[in-house]
Image: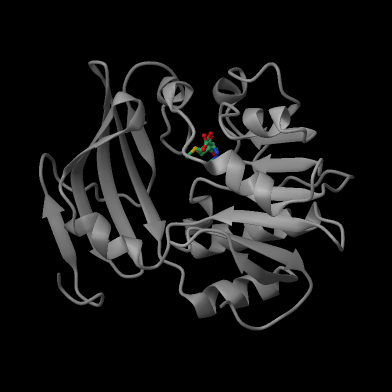
Length: 249
Ligand SMILES: C[S@@+](CC[C@H](N)C(=O)[O-])C[C@H]1O[C@@H](n2cnc3c(N)ncnc32)[C@H](O)[C@@H]1O
């Protein structure tokens, strides 16, 4: 593996897309960020609800930003949390008629209430830095002084492994992931992946940004948040609290 300062490109099937835009293809509705609604409907959980549940007070109300089909939120409701989901895709939200939900961009969401916990999962915090900071401002707006935010990121060390791993990976739920292309130009990773489930194929081309610990601390502070704790050994999950602080660690 080259150093993190180099460009590491792997082309397996197609050219890397030139645009810094998230797009998808395949059967059914595709969201504006390229997610396939039918694919997310099939996707099982991978311990996300349990991590969130363990991090927040029992019975805490939970707002999930970018909730999709309610994949994470529905088990949290079953664990005793009053939940609310936000997504800008009506097609995603249509898959969770059983849950309270709001169709809105995260960036402009300003409800006149707060929640015991706000969740931003699915590595959405790895968005382009300006968008990330807008997401964090929305997180903070919906937290009371004693509230807790729970985040799932692609941890800094993951980016080199993504480009270096095998192009085909078989995961739980009969889901095969094929990395069609991956271009690592620190701090940005551009990838195009293919998901295969029981003969159905979806593609998703996306860009995500590595977040250094310093950048994380300063972006949190700019949103009047401070780092709390790592919630998983791989540093994918962490908590934050309202109020200024200094160091992520
Ligand atoms: C990767 S999916 C994750 C869905 C869900 N958290 C899960 O893990 O199953 C990202 C979701 O966020 C939504 N989304 C992306 N950008 C958004 C934005 N700026 N505002 C609102 N929703 C957004 C998409 O429509 C999609 O449903």
